[in-house]
Length: 260
Image: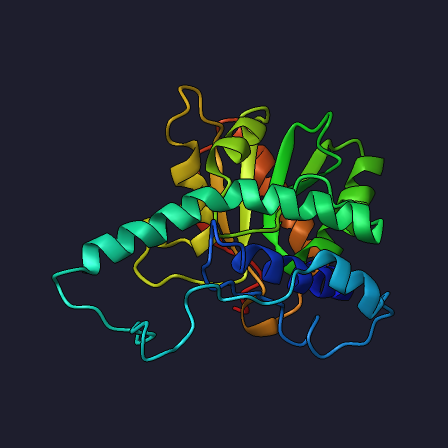
């Protein structure tokens, strides 16, 4: 989430998507600890009337517990049916992008806030040479740094992921293929991952793999454990992305802001 308003709005959208019978899967909403969860911000709390208009009444249909209709809600399945259950789960996830788009469209009609592309947003990318990709409240220092670098003549853009699952691989690859180099900032570290990268960088690499002409990609580990991502950090990372665009060899994963 980018801010408190988006966190509130996404909670409503998440119920809409997760309880749609075409999906019917759990949905986890991730918010940056401290930066978002323990901060104060003004939000527009919708009326109960509008929420009721947007969200249907909770209805489990024929999945009610009743002696005449034995079902299980246990998290266990044996080998006889596990593969079939997993395939049903996968089918629900495969249908979810369309349901998510519908939910955002309905949300805009009811509440008057239109988020555009549900899966990721772009900031100053129209004429960008290089882009930074990230998630969550990281966007705040990144946007400020980009505005400052634009004044210096550096054409930098930002792409912020909204949904990690489902991952908008094809759409994201099409967008990122326009740029000379891409830098992915992870505020996490996936121990033992390919190239010792964070989770977002690993996913973006996989998304770009089918492209015949992939832009250079840098994985950047920064701001772990709630450490501040500063404007100098963002400018430092941008310099490295520009170096990658110029063909200068460097490590595929770099840690930013480490103390000596």
